[in-house]
Every structure is written in structure tokens, then in C-alpha cells.
Length: 439
Image (cartoon, rainbow, N blue to C red; front, side, top):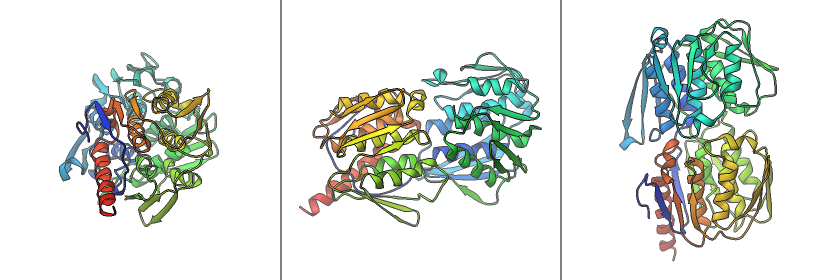
């Protein structure tokens, strides 16, 4: 079925998916836990369940460049493992000339910039893909108000002068929650009073997730009105910390359930991850969602139906929900989509082109995506635009198509889910076996 697990071009024939998978670890949670571990003076261990994504490798790499000693031990043929922070980031190491390559990971770059501005002198942050085009200006201006000086407000960014924090960091809350997370990481390390938001906070759930990680490492976050403060200092937890299961990637599989084919994801505990809202939205579309402990089972009627929802706090769910909407009865209207244009691709444009290529009916304006559902998609060739979520969405779309789907740039899944096509094959083979047994 598949040319190669990480082939740049993958062709998928029409199929169904069914069965059970263990959810991979949340990339969002793992980023945060690794950073906390690298700022804690004592060694700590984090257990993960997935092949390490390129984004996580980028975070480990920049922390090592800043003097942290971090070991990664893979197990189960690379599908799980343990990350151990043995020595924390060394302020003296940060002061020497060093380049921090963040790859295509916006989280890595935005989380590390405040730390580099606090300790670094002649530290340069770089990135690849679309990352140099993504915004950093509001975060840079916030740090410059505390005395930092940068060569640019877009990557590559060189720290030309460190800051001396005092009072409150003041920053908009509606541009990127990643800015707020980056500032939260350094509050226990400096004399700043806290963070003052000058606008309402978008994607608040991701800041709550940061608070969960900090709490695990001895730092409490107090959030009152438009101000955030921290108390405590970094301390390593006793025992091994397990990264949470990933709701954003689980959404692809849950949305693929259809007819008699149920899909179960294990290892999805209650979480601050905003993308757990996928359960609510799929239920609104008519799917049956059952939870048993940390397992979630999805099944669907013959056809789901369109819904209206605001995606401003859950941008990562939009591509896969658009796929499900494309084969649902009636119209789906998704608002709050403007921030999707600043992701690994212009995701509004990428989603529209994906669905159009497969025979879907879709259009968009500045802040909305409109989809008119049809019974089935035709199939065709889809460009991933080097965006992991577009590649995975196109793969799930193939299960609703009459003809094969060819995905160019399919290896983009390595950014967050290197084992995606292997898991796809497992579920497809399971569905085929079940169909043959009941024939």
C-alpha cells in the first residue's frame, strides 16, 4: 500500500480504517517538559510514546547547544523511549557564541528566545522551511523593553544585548500563546514581577498546559485577570514523568471512523490540551464518542452532518475537521481561521486546495472556511505544502474517496508523527481483515 514509511510520495487506495492504537505522546507537552527539565538543577526523566518528531529533536538540540546534557534512549524499535536531563542549561555556555537551529519548530524558537535574551550574548536563533516567515516581532519588542537588543525581528535573530528584567513583561495575548509560554519559562529565573497581557489571550489552553508542566517541576503559575505570575523554583520531580497522550494527532484517527468501522485510541487522559475539544465537535457532527478510562472509541452513522464552530483556540484541528465536513450532510462554517495562515503553510489555502483536488466544495475568506458536504470525494493528487497536518488530513481523506489519493510531500509527517503511515497501514489492514471475516 505504501511506497515507504517516510516516502515523499505516497499513494493510498480507497480503504477503511478500524481497530485500536496507542496515542502518541503530545508534542506540545513534551516540548514543555523537556524545557523544564533542562532548567532544573537536578536530573530528571521523561518517558515518551512515539518516534521522536523533528520538532522535539530541535528542542533537544538547542538545549544541548545551550550547555544542557540531555540523553535520549529509544526503545520498542524507536516507538517509545526516555529523555533524561542530566545537567541543566549553563548560563556561562549561553554567553558564548552559539547558533540555535530550531528547524521548522515555531514552538522551539519562541520558547527559547526569552531564555537566549536573558542569558545569551552573540546567540543566534535560526530556522528553516516557513519558520523564517513566521512572526516574532511582538515577542522581540516585549524583550527589548527590558533592555534586550536583537539583530532582527525575524529569523535569523541574533541576541546583541541581554536584558535585565524588572516589573512586568507587557505583551499582546492574541498573537501567539507561544510567546506567553516562553516568558513563563524564564520568570523563575529572573526578577521580573510577571507577565501583563495587553489584549485577551488566544489559545489559553496551551498556556494552561505550560502551567501543568511548570507545576510538575515545582513552579506554580498564578493567573489573575490579565496578569500571570510564578512562585517557586525549578526542582526535579521524583520518579519518571510521562508525557501526555496527544489529542491533536488522535483527532485524525477518531475522525476516520465510519459505517461499522470503529477506531479506539488508548492513553488519552484528561488534559489541558485544547484539542481535546475534538470529542465535542465530532459528537456535534453526529459521531458516537465513548470514553472508558483513558481510552476513546469513535464510531459514526452512515453520514455525519455539518456544524458551525470557532477555531480560534484550536487551529490544529481545522484540517482534519474540514475533511470530515467535506463528506457530511449540509454546510460547515468554521470561523476564527486567520491565524492558520501563519502555520507551516498557509493552512487556509492549503486545506482549500486539498479538498478541491479531491472533489470537495470549499471556499474561504479572511477569517472563515465554508464547506458544502458531499456524499464521497473523488480522489486525486494532493500537495502537502510541506505541512504535516495537511499530509495526514489528505491520508484520512483517502478513506472517503472513490479513487486513490496521491500525496506529494508526504514525508512532512516527520515533523510531528513519523510513524503516521505505519499506523495508517495497521488500521487499514485490520479493517480489511475484519471485512473478509464477515464477508
